[in-house]
Image 1 (cartoon, rainbow, N blue to C red):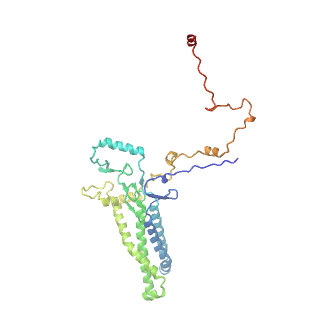
Image 2 (image 1 turned 30 degrees about the horizontal axis):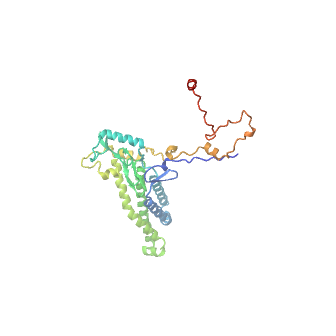
Image 3 (image 1 turned 180 degrees about the vertical axis):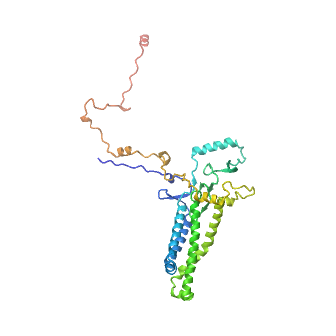
Length: 368
């Protein structure tokens, strides 16, 4: 007899994670929900490079050098790889406190601050932490119910606390934090080089064609070639300043071992003139730590399996499911011997009434 087996539905942790992130490929890809500008970034890079490879590269490879399209392809592939790595990875999201952990932290805070009279504002929830002889304040996150580690901050767009939070970048569709900052920096650096490269060789292409037959004659003879070229020049011209400027700004931050969030808030350049405790005082050491240091693993465990109690009601086991699918039939009692016959049990309605207890002998004699 064939037995049907029902498999249990596995619930992974990424399906129950709070926050405003979207997951793909069974939790392997993690992004923010607002992905419209990220698609625009992909369209601009892919569209501009496609036009460049389709029109200008063939002419430049013949007239100047075949290394021109090869180097352009290397920059393009590197930019796309770092962009996707930045967009699809966990930036360093810190898990929220479990109910028991949150209750324990609340008890610690109440024991430290004492009872707050009604109507008064409670004191700020801050812990002091010493790093390189500098006092750093750890702030309490009321959403995640945790004391945030140093340099962490809560992203209002993704609704998560991110370790070494730099900023939320809509162009890559993700937060930029401890686990993907180096890829973000390599992306904007390679994109700056690619933009300059495409822009410069578009100018060279127009100049070479114009020197041979003249600029106006070139426009008349090849009207289908110049609209893409002009479009590439315009896109590269307007994106060149922003991308190159952003790369220069982040190069400055990397040299100081500082984040965008700290620079905007003036954490180390404010009125107190507190020195940056994370800086080594050396540009090379700071760059090595930010760009070449060990990459910490993700603490989310997105593809981990939740226990049955957390994932919902307990599904029936395989044995229970298979037994319930079998047809139920009464036992063939006519073939059983008297020793093997099951005992008869009476239901509450069929059970006889209990007999009254016999009176004691002394009471019976007294009645006589």
